[in-house]
Length: 323
Image (cartoon, rainbow, N blue to C red):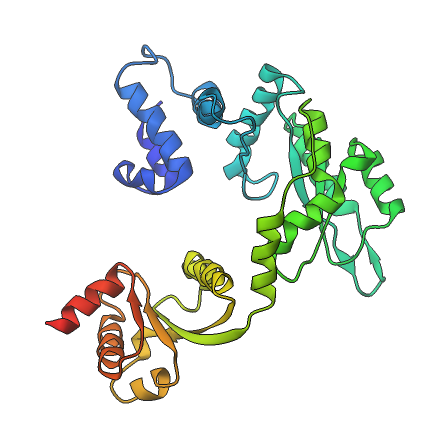
């Protein structure tokens, strides 16, 4: 097969393929082909790509340091991007046996406000689509806005071919950090360990719950300005936002984050935008756009003695300002 096919599939040059997980897998196969490891055979999605996926999934398990390896397949069942991964899971189930591989399918049980009821049909169709690829889910984790009744759980178990106790409710939570406790209450840990024939015991969540208590019951609060040029897409700064949550919980402080677009920050509005803040973080983001605003921000917080943290390009702007 023409190696350029993989480059077109990734929609990025081969030299940039390591930027994404799929890219790394395809790049690895391409490199093996170039080294002649396939002995001139045609490079195909099956078995070459799927074998590479399986190899990478099992690396940690074969190291002997871990009892369980959790691998997430993102996206939606049926999407073309995830098909090689689902096929790899199917093969792993067959190769390793039922007690060594467990498939947990996260699915949506929507609530129809007009009808006043939860609908199971989307989940049924999702499981059916997964089974068409040869993968039978062992556990259903059902995202829902309302409690799942016993009748709905039984219906899902019956039509999706899973055990009744393996239908796990994942109801909306006030914070994602509530989810481990919710899954514990639902018995997800016991279901998984039973399937894998591993001993189960009550987990010690003392430290986790202490963190959760501090997070939910802060004694004070601060306001931090996050200056960047992708503030319309807050997921761009997801790791930074989560860091604020963890740092706030550690200090029993609620961290309010104000997003400030660096492209529209200038000497005329800098005082209005930053003077009331307890601290400023200038985020990464290469390219010329928004650079001047970041420099203005760094200069202002330095002159006004406002606590500042620059990350990557943000710190480089501090160096430029100091010059």
